[in-house]
Image 1 (cartoon, rainbow, N blue to C red):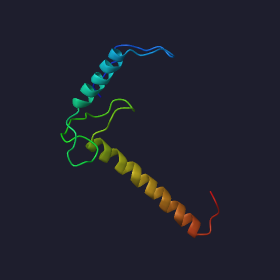
Image 2 (tube, rainbow, N blue to C red):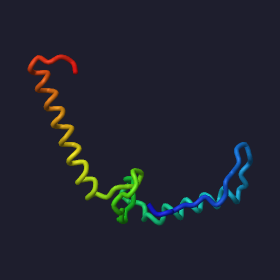
Image 3 (cartoon, helix red, strand yellow):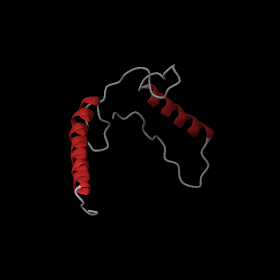
Image 4 (cartoon, one colour):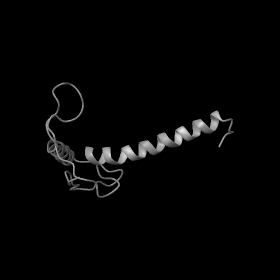
Length: 97
């Protein structure tokens, strides 16, 4: 996804964070999440406004619905086929594989 938040200051372990640094970090986080959209008013989690997600490039990228449907359908069917084969094998008296 887009770079919504960048670390402007790195804090060393076992040091005290100044109040202004902490406040600026929180404001940056809030601004980053505000870029995604407004909060839902029905009490559920997520955002009320839609935002675009492009096709993934890296394994860590978010996926859009089209990519999800195209790729999970095939994988799910393969798992179902394997499970059906396993059930048939066990019903025919096969042992533990």
